[in-house]
Length: 626
Image (tube, rainbow, N blue to C red; front, side, top):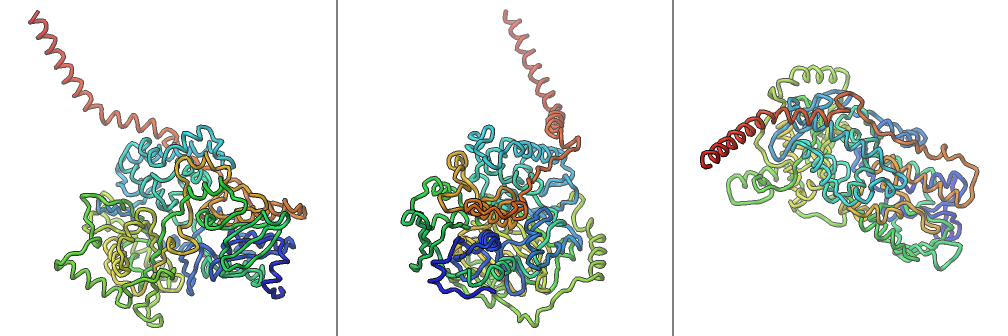
């Protein structure tokens, strides 16, 4: 039982102050609290959870999914008395959908080595896909995750962007397009030309190879029952609610005034003191704090580590219509960049009849929406077009599973043409990927709008236009009845005051080798923690927990606390790169070169014959002239 402490008492009784009540900060605070230290957590928001956020029904608007390899997260779920559930679409069956905005084409991907967004009969793309994955994994194995700047050829790797590497490595346009427009926006929520190759390789290495970053198969994913924010809420309760002070954004961390204590000053002028401080904020938010003395290398590093771009859009339906067409609710989209020959439906208005119809459609979808948005509200809108009590909910039971699987067997081959694709006439789909959710008994599709897709999506100023565009895209790709959602929510993480970005960050070219040494290094009596600083699984809830616990370990060692076992606090086992060991995977590049040469051989023979014939004629003319 924790006794309520006043703010004046909190100023005097602290061993450690943790800044940030997300998963990293609360994980660090829990470790220190369990070892008998007096801990105080300062949180700028009016809630705990950081970049995890769940609504009243348990639907996640922030971090959601995790896999079996996230052992620290699974252990924490068990410790907190929570439960997790497997991904519903994986249990039911069905296929993910892939859509290209450039070709207006949707694809299916039902073979292990098939390149997403391409036909499964394209041999060159398959070989190029395997060869590129192999090349990336071979480079990843050479990365020193503890000190990436000491990796062999680190400066050369860091001077290049991930885009330049892919363009020089991939042989086919399809594979190049996949890695540039799918891997980087979804995993790093940024664009490939902005990301250092060295940092991209570090990220891929920390996840265990490129195959895990692709992550098309959802069969191994799980989520927290009740929402991921429950993790932070339960940690908050176990630490003691009086030990976490909300609405306290930190302005200054002062190590100069007092040689034994660190002084933390909040924006409202409150002062707190502790012997040690853990800053559990993402790099872009660390720049909002004034450090005394200044940390020049850390400051430069944070400014060159931009947060990603991400908005979540949730559309609720009365039934999971996507199963009727053999889909499992997962949708992946590429090609969000504007092109001169690409139509921009929804981006421009005119006075034509089609525009009037689109306006009527938007009004019918968003009839309870407001045309303006409040900047100080992280929810752009939470609209219910029908009362919740009247909404028809769908319960998936054993009979439903059987019917869905029967339907999938009947429609799987007939839905797509023989080539595995179908051209449809429609405008650009504005999302990066979508996942289904059934947390409140009502099926929904959660769209993630990242990277270039985020830029195009928010060019539409009106909320009604954006929601209508997403709904209309679902209708064209998955099922016509998805054009009429029952309700929706939109959360732009970039406009959220104390996140200002997505679930992960990148480093620009040249940053890692110049300033990487300051990445996770403590500064005096101040340590740092966030998911971006995790050696393994950065950008995930697992990475946040690992980083927070490792920061707490540094503090405990610094305070000469020896009554603990490191392995009991954090499971920091190395994540090994998964290398393909089949003959084709090992020699894909050689086979690709031979195959491409063989395909070009007839053309080369014709060219050589014509060249030889021309040289022969020239030689004969020269002989006659002599």
